[in-house]
Length: 94
Image (cartoon, rainbow, N blue to C red; front, top):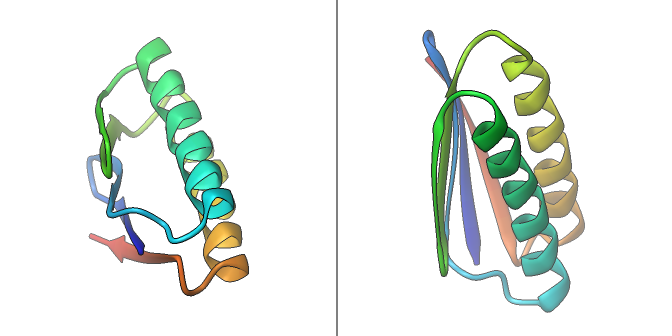
């Protein structure tokens, strides 16, 4: 099971994931979305850590950050909806 927490903070955004999805399809989809987001952060402002079974991507508001967050959350929610036994996502508003 991959557990994802997507945080909409006062100062910025973050997406954290832990665990392994039960299917290759779900794992690949989550990894692709979070990897693309980390690439966007690398080219802009923020930080990320990508490890086997664990990821954390953080970035400040502004300069397209909200759009990046929405794209990632929409994709991750679609994966969670398609594979509810493999992926969960929690939205956190601070």
